[in-house]
Length: 179
Image (cartoon, rainbow, N blue to C red; front, side, top):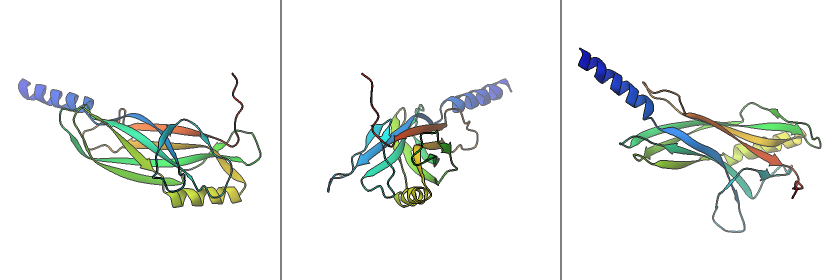
């Protein structure tokens, strides 16, 4: 009986500490020039003045999934939502966070044992463009985007380190940087 209890305790404790988790999250931006392929670069700030139709800039979020197990993990589901902090065009007041305008999911087929995998979370261009156009016509523009992402838990798994949120500040005009 003690052997069974010890085995149950070890299986529960190892599964609690050996789940795939989100080790990092952030934003990437691609600015398309002529007929080049898209090349994304990690950013912590975006210069994006009010314009109803963003043509060249493409933002996306990313998460880094870490698998501390000695075996690969399969069929991981990421759920994410994107919302914006809006402020009235022409004002300098702080914006207000809105409800998410985009919710989506991403399936990750496999994360190898002991490795970290960067997973891009694409933003639906049609949904983003329609949202920006609607807000521009109403007289508002985002001063930040935020993505919230989670690894969907399976039976017996916890939520520790499986949720992350990251914000991308947006400037409407170039800021004067002090030297």
